[in-house]
Length: 311
Image (cartoon, rainbow, N blue to C red; front, side):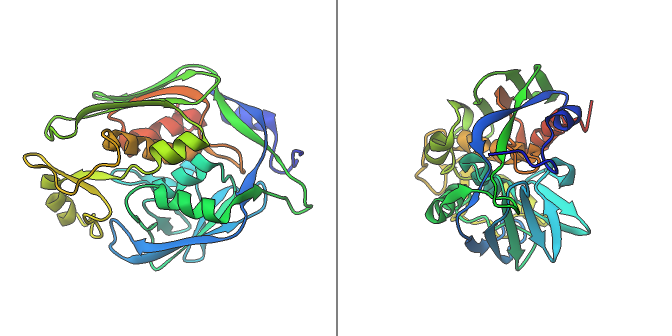
């Protein structure tokens, strides 16, 4: 394995990310062994869309192609992150990217071209990252090669100093560590069937696939109509989200885990933190991370902090 001078310069990465140290992980960058795809409804648009995942060369990283425009899966392209993560560039956008990016990051697919047809949104599928994980595992993962046929060493961002962001009673704190550990908390007092939950785990490919990826997105039944009036969740249904009523509890059980809502927040966190990735390197920072009531907006704010976009 080797570094390509065009893409990899540790000093340059240090200058861009003063909060991070980029270190070799003893593995080459990876990509898909062959193409994969899924079609389905877009959660917010309601459109029937297809996402095709294609292998690309080492150093290309992960990026979307929508209407002929290339949109890198990078924090500088995030334009909105209220109820989903939205990327935009060259007048085009792609919505609800977090579950797919979570699966790619969680399984170590560092380089991937994602073509979106039929709309501007990644299909929601069953509301989790499970079907993306299965599609990736079915086609396999292999070493990514550059134009000369060589592999490239993979770098990972290690946190150098403690960092935090907060908004009201929501926060994310990260502490330097030699491994990735996530502790995530949620609190929905208006929905007693959810209530307050915490999920904590060290993260690797196996843990991600079995314990995190299958967790589905969820919503409060009494808030759905308000979201639809705002032009959102047009494609939402009992088949692609867990729905909880404030008075009647879960309307479409059973849950896959007792704390499935909290675990789904970790799916989102992995996908949103993957936007720190540069040139086919690992996106998720190696750190001990504690998040409470964070959500997409705070996830993005924290990644911007680590990337040096905000001080």
